[in-house]
Length: 185
Ligand SMILES: Cc1cc2nc3c(=O)[nH]c(=O)nc-3n(C[C@H](O)[C@H](O)[C@H](O)COP(=O)(O)O)c2cc1C
Image 1 (spheres, rainbow, N blue to C red):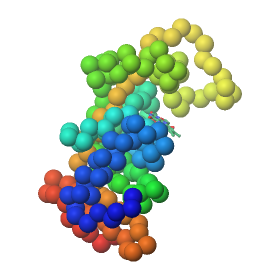
Image 2: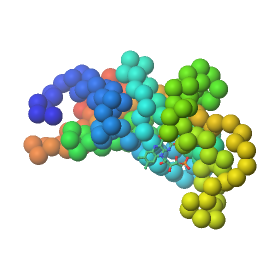
Image 3: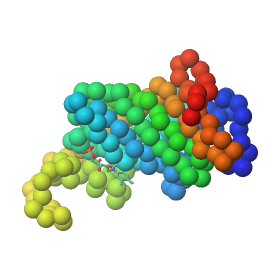
């Protein structure tokens, strides 16, 4: 970005505009954030793809296999973090989120209907759950396919910690239910 935004309102609006861009721009660095969850008394984290962004509702959607470890973790502990960094923007976002899962409702069935005849559908049709042991990397489990395991993870954004790295000086701001405020980077 050439122009350096100065107001907190303008920065927050641009953050959500950029988040919305990720669903159209496959090369946007924020399209693949890291989702960090609580796993018992430890942490777990993995890359996911942002599939839909609703700036008005402050919701970020991602798809997964309902048998994945992250699903077990989010059902036990729905508070999580989505972390993303864009070298082009020089912006890091740490989004504190509340996760919820949709497996059977309209949110899941309508989206599954759109992708079920496309190659990415294979990601949700594996006979074995993610993380199941295999004899060889390419081993394919045999047996009848019972059903799809497609699920939608909805991340409700509770707050955003924005960090800008810049030659002229780094800046950091927090946006939450109390509004936006500058903090020491
Ligand atoms: C670029 C990239 C994008 C990914 N996107 C997703 C995704 O949208 N949903 C997902 O469940 N896993 C995705 N994965 C795989 C996860 O990072 C992870 O390996 C897998 O989901 C198992 O994680 P879990 O055992 O913590 O549930 C992606 C991996 C990469 C490298």
